[in-house]
Image (cartoon, rainbow, N blue to C red):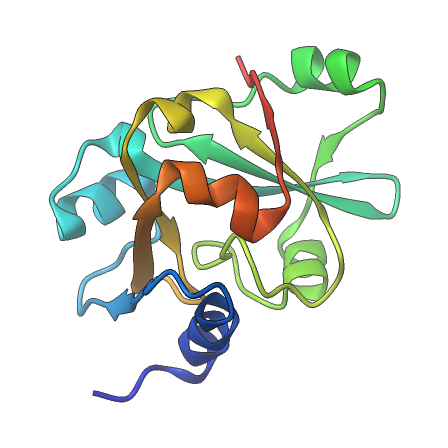
Length: 155
């Protein structure tokens, strides 16, 4: 079965790592962490929510466990930069994808990426793959490798 164009872009990027990561598309939505967990049959905490924020004009991507909320004030203090939630147009321009399908890789612009330390407590995690109907599974230990992301506490 042929992947949607956005999901194929993610798959092409994943292929460069030699990890046999496969994008899976679903008829039902995987837009929210709970919908994604229901679709793949995992715990909601295993879903890596892709949350795009901004610090001025700089896009920032936070990969947050589906069971957690990003504590914006705490993270802003710890990173030493002001951060604010990005609107839908900023997300699309920075990532190349609509909210609900932003993957951890293959973005339109370079983004600093931060990974919720709680995701590292799971052997396997799932992340968005370009559309609100596509995800891929990977070992949590590979998430920093494929994203060049920094592991932080988000709560």
